[in-house]
Amino acid sequence: PNIQYFPCKLTHPISSGINAEYGHYFKQINLSIMAAEVLKKKIQELMNERDEALEKGDALENQLNDMKEQLLKAEFEKKELERRLKLTEVELDNQSSLRNQLKKKSINLKVEDERIKDDMKSQVKSINEMEELLQLIDTRYEELELDYNETMEDLNAL
Image (cartoon, rainbow, N blue to C red; front, side, top):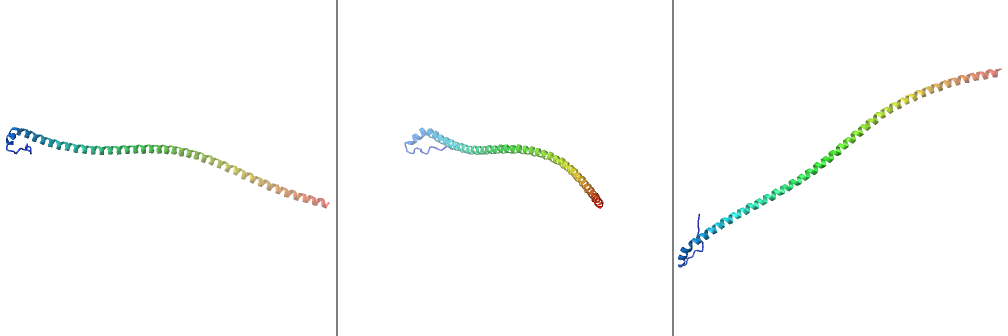
């Protein structure tokens, strides 16, 4: 490793003995400073990684919350569609029932119409018979009136 000596190296003439005697301490201090710098960089890198991981975690949490919200919306829409489907089924059943009732009414009306037609035919026949009867009565009345007039003339002639 690149070893630098402590920047506060003693420069006084007396210090040469101190440098020689305590130089290994200076080397240890320099190594400790270097190790502290390396650790400081490593800690900074780890903190940066932690911050990135926290940001990613926040983003993932936001995505999870969005997905939960979408799931709740989808569940609500599913329930709404199921409710509409049930209403549609009920409506179809009601329409089918109504259709069957209308078919029955139509059949009943056709039967009633036929009965009315038959009644009308019978009434027309009765009216025709009554008209014929009235015609016969009129004819007979005219005949009787003629006979009466002739009888009266004969009586008056006597």
